[in-house]
Length: 339
Image (cartoon, rainbow, N blue to C red):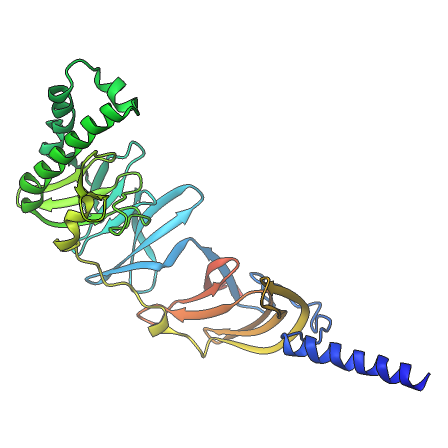
C-alpha cells in the first residue's frame, strides 16, 4: 500500500513537471470582472475611435502622410497631416504602388492599371506596351502551323502541336529580349505573390517605365527559352532581374514613435492554456487578460484585453496617440470635449 501511494505521488510530480516544462501555467479567474473590455474604457474624458488606416502602410511624402485605408471592400489612399487627421482621399484597390512623386498606381478589376496623384486626383489609365499589341506569339503560331486555328492550337496537347508552341514561345522570348527589355528603366509588380524566382506574375499587374512613359505588361504572356543544360524552361520574366525595381517610398515607422508613457500594463491574469505543436514537439502557451492604464491629455482610463498584444504610438507632432490591438486593429485615442 505504501509503495502504491509513493508511486501515485511520483506520477503526480512527474505530470506536474512535464506540464511545467511544456509551458503550462496555473490559471486564475478574471481579476477585474467589472472592468471595461477593449475597445471600451473605464474613465472620463477619453474614448477610443476605430481607425481604418493600416499603419503598416503609411508613406511619407514631403510634409504629408499617405495612409492606406481598408474599410470593408473599399480601399482608399488617404492624405493625412502630421496629427493623423484625414485631409483628403482617393479610391484605389488592394494591389497598389506608391511612387516618390506622389502617384499611386493600382490594378483595376479588369486587370488594367491606372495611376492617380494623391493631390490632383486625376485618374489616368496606363496602356499596354505597344510591343504586346503586335501579337508576335500568335502570328508566329499562324506562320508555323497555318492549318490550325489559333484557339484550337492553344488547347491542344498533342506532341506535334506542343513543339510548334515551343518554337513560337521561344521566338516571342527573343523578341521581348531584343525589343522591350532594352527600353525598360524600371519596373514594379503590383501583386504581392509575384516572384522572379519562379517566373510567375500573379494576375498580371506589372508596371514598366521607359523613356517613352509608363506602360503595363498584360498577363498570360507565352514566352520562354528552353535551357538545354537543365532541360527546363526559362520564363521571360527572368529578363527583368538585371533591371532596377521602381523606388520605394519611405514609410512611417511606428517603432520610432512608441508611446510608452501613454499605455502601461499594470496587471495580468492567466485564464487558460492552449496547446500547440506537431508530432514531435508540443507545448502550452498561456492566454491572458491584460489590464492597462491609458493616460492622454491629462485624463486617465483603464481597460482589459483578452488574448491580444497591444502597443501605442504617437503621430509625428505628438498630438495624436494610436493604440494597436492585434485582434481588433488600430484605434485613435480621443478626448471627450464635453466632459
